[in-house]
Image (cartoon, rainbow, N blue to C red; front, side, top):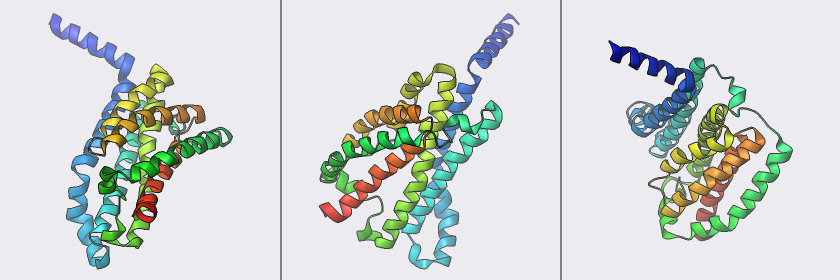
Length: 242
């Protein structure tokens, strides 16, 4: 009985001190796990065949676009649903315009710094095997542009998860500087499998994007910057390097 009383006391202390952080961590882990294991089979089994019957020309590129959109929905819906437990207003998680006068300059400078690096990366064999994400040589230019549009939606959801939900969610308890460090780890892990230079670069990117979000009090500039760099890499890979 003493063991059960001690266990109960410890669990109450954990709940009192870190329930919000536990929910944030679990919701993020669930969302990322669902996108990794269940989205592609669901799209291939259900949504893909339906799309193929309606638009035969859309297959298989349509499946890739659908999968990206479903992943975006998952990493938005699951964290947002968790707010019913932790009762945090969505505006406190970076869902706000912030201060555009400040963050427009931040992302403008960051983008200009990235431009030569993007050009050099696009010339590397490892990047050429990976990008453009929707290769027009395989799917055609229509799906290349549709793919970029889908990536814009995905980047919005992606940045909400890392520079909104995790950053500002953890920041409420441990402070934003520590929260920048916390969100860096899963962000980098999610780049495993990409070219090694991109994965190492994501360490710096996570910190820079975290600082931009902290200064802006919004994840919106991070979504704009992340998409702009990704889209530029695809455009350079298609129209400049090849």
